[in-house]
Image 1 (cartoon, rainbow, N blue to C red):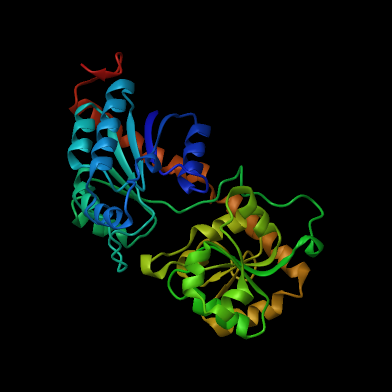
Image 2: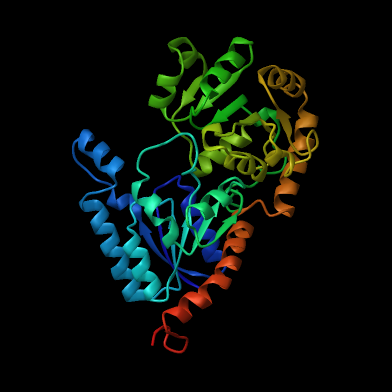
Length: 360
């Protein structure tokens, strides 16, 4: 397929990794970096424009996408975490025989009520396919008028998240109990209490967010440095004896991206116990789970001194993730399989001429 792919494509974006997987699967991508359309100017005006999802940046993005669609005649318009689309833009693409897809990791229907969803709420009936990572979202999308919905899982990137070189051991691991990420929900309080229990916790992430979330004492004790992306993130997993993984409960998540990345990179995974995790890793054999702080403390004290057990579980977790397709190639292939059933009727409705590759 030829895909017009709009997404935030700056360093560290998971959308970049999904694009790479689509190209490995043989598809041609015309990339549009939506980060190039971010509004500049005073902070207050940017906040208002984001809440209203209106302004010259919105107009420019929609205009440019339609121009690229007319120029390249893609089969599919793929919007990865794009909130600035107008319903009329999607309708005009459909009139050209271009199927449209929204890949949305965040939960529009969740309790968090983030700003910026105004246009997306209008867009839901206009996309040909919505991609979500939650069972609970499927009936919600359909009730909101969605034409079709598919659930896949977030995934690791096999060219980036792979195990350490042979011979890697605790002699190479400088992080004991490690978390790399953001202080959503109650993570800061949880990690603070782990530190207060005398456990050697290390946090990496955006400094302003963690400085706000942690007390000055906890920040000084636990915080190790700025966000880690790509190879630096993988190496942080390698250099950690125990890798913690938390769900974003305010998104009603069943599992988390980080769990698959840790397993893909051959790390020892200690994650929240959920049905989504239990369905994907054998507990105590391929990963270790906790339901509360006390159980997490017990597991850390059990496994921190036991390198052999950690190595065995990490290797089994990586093998499971690889075997069962917890990587971008498999998950993107599932989306493309569904697209292959949607595209023919979209093209037929537009009077698409297969020989010319455009409406007849």
